[in-house]
Length: 132
Image (cartoon, rainbow, N blue to C red; front, side):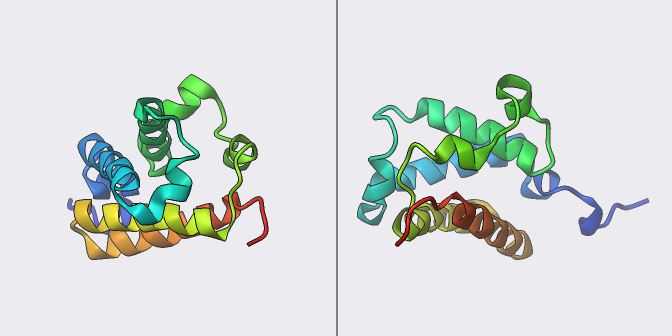
């Protein structure tokens, strides 16, 4: 019996561990490379390895794969964890710029790109904690 796309998790549809790692790697490369992302880049440590590791673990579980982040750190509590950082519409948009470009470059399935982009937009908008 063949499994239809709708019954697969986003983690399975993206291509599993290897593709999630590639997405995270490209996302942070873009954050380093794009002048338009300077605002969010300066919110991160100089060495992005810890951020890469946490985002990889979070996205793996968020997309329906193993709950690596929860196992190591507990509930993500994304908004609470981001409160120490100024996140306005500008930072949200910079984050989405990097993530959407990474999605375009890493994810072959156009429908999946669209679904993930829409979901990321909701999460990124929820992270805003400052006007503007």
